[in-house]
Length: 149
Length: 149
Image 1 (cartoon, each protein chain N blue to C red):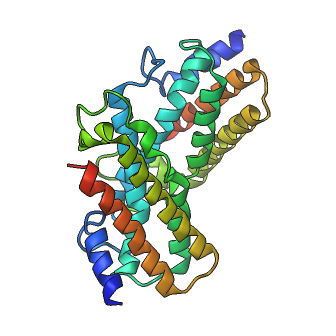
Image 2 (cartoon, one colour):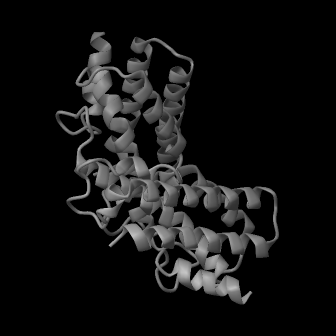
């Protein structure tokens, strides 16, 4: 037990803020969901550029980014906790006032991302993949329109 | 084709910066990897607090966070691209000067996270899970010591 305690003191001091909380801190939740959205952007960036013809279509890169996008697609929503409507966030009050619609929009994005990853796995045509990237982009936009300042 | 183009213009304008690049922008790569580290922190926070006894051990929450940590464990490293050693980053030059050691440290973290997720899936004892959380924390620390300012 002593060894475990020492390991933890040494190992986790860096990772944890003092007095880690049982209920998440709203500011941590905001940082978290923004972090996930950065991961969305990293993956969606080249996909969108390929779909728009700004960069050549690259099936390997498309596959990697689509798989990664799909892998994290469900992660942000748990960061929209009670109390995290205030602070350094562009989230509109509608996220909390109309949670059912927000969850629906989130689910549509998840489905669009899953479908994109699936199309690439199935070696669909470039045309179908580019069209589905457009559908993912639409689902981003739909949620931003209704729930982001 | 026209429909696709319109969808893309409408849907992706928000997601993409103008003139999306074929090779990733170092600043985007820094934002991206910091985003993933926020996801690490969100998941590791309550795990560490449980291991330290700051919050009660909650098998369901531990399982959720460990699964999520494991799911994203391999994501940050692709953000340490050429040229992203400068700018708003705490990454030390050693990441690029000693890439083999960095990759090794990354791999040890991935293995520790995978083992943690596995232990919870296997319904291991609280003691073993807490010990493994400590091991994950150690692997965070080892990499921070050598590669982060």
